[in-house]
Amino acid sequence: MSADQAQRLRELAKAADVKPSAGQPRKTSNSGCTSIAVTSGKGGVGKTTLSLTLAASLARLQKRVLMMDVDLGLANVHILLGIAPRYNISHVIAGECSIDQVVVEAAPGVYLVPGASGLEELANLDTARLERLRMAFMGLEDNYDYLLMDTGAGIGSAMTHFVKNSDLALLVMTPDPSSLADSYAMVKVLYEKGNVRVAVVVNMVSSEREGRETFDRLNTLVVRFLKKPVELYAILPADKEVHRLGRRQIQLADRGANSRFYDIASDLAKKISGYGASAGAAGGKSGFFSRFFGLSER
Image 1 (spheres, helix red, strand yellow):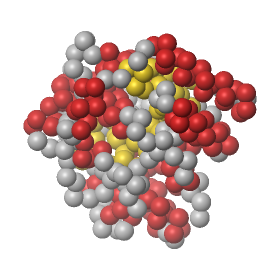
Image 2 (image 1 turned 90 degrees about the vertical axis):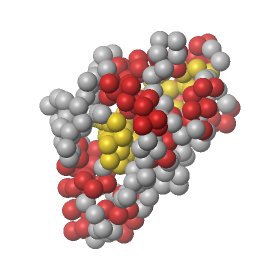
Image 3 (image 1 turned 180 degrees about the vertical axis):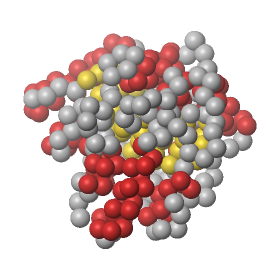
Image 4 (image 1 turned 180 degrees about the horizontal axis):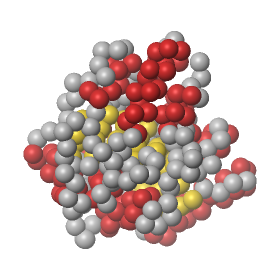
C-alpha cells in the first residue's frame, strides 16, 4: 500500500494509538469476537464504503478488526485499500498456504482477508479437510474483537450463509424503490433461515426525514408480513466526496468534524462496540466460523 493510499485509514486509527505487531495481533479484550456481516439486497448502495469506514472507526476505539471480503463475484476491498495480496482464501482451500499467510495488515488495528473467491468450493470438501479448515479459521477469532465481512449483494445461498451465521446483519439500503424491494427480500430470507438480528443502515439520503421514511417503509412491510421488526442503526447522508474518493481507490477515513457522514459512521461504531446498544455475541454463543463450518450444507 502506498503512503498516500494508506494515510486516511492511518489517521483514523492513530487516535487509538494501536501499535502494529509482528505476526498476528492480539485482541484488546477477553470477550468473544463479534461477527458483523455488512450486506444488501442490491448493489450500488455503498456497502463496501461503509465496511471500510466502520473498520477504521472501530480501530479508533482501540478494537482489533479483521475484515473479510466475501463478495464472491467482485472482491474489491484490497483494491480500495491499495493492496496487492499474494494470497486469498482460495489458496487456503487449495492447500497452497496457511490462513496466517492470507491475513495482511491494512492499517494499525485493521487486518484484511482479501478476495474470498473459492469459498463455494467448501461444499465439495471431504470431512477431514473441512475440519482442518474450520480449526484454522476458528483460530483467527482469538486475535480479534470484530470480524467484519463485506458480503456480495443479493439473496444467493452462498451470501446468506455468511449473513445468517453472523452475530449482526447490517443491512444497507437507499431510498431507491428497487432497494426497498430487494431489502425486504433479504430480510425475508434471513428470517426464514433463523437470523434474528437485522440492523438497517439507510445510506445516500438527502435528509434525516427521507432516511426515516425509507426505513419506516421497509419496517412496515417486515412487520406486516414477517411479524418481526428490523432495527434502525444509522442514517447516512449522500456525500459526493465519499463517492469521489472511492473512485480514486483511496481508503475512506475521518475527514474531521465537518463531515456529517464520518461523524455518523463513528457513532455507529460506538453503538456496535457497546458504547450504545451493543451488537455483541450472546454469552456462551459459539464463534462465527464454528457456526459457519458446522452448518455448511454438504
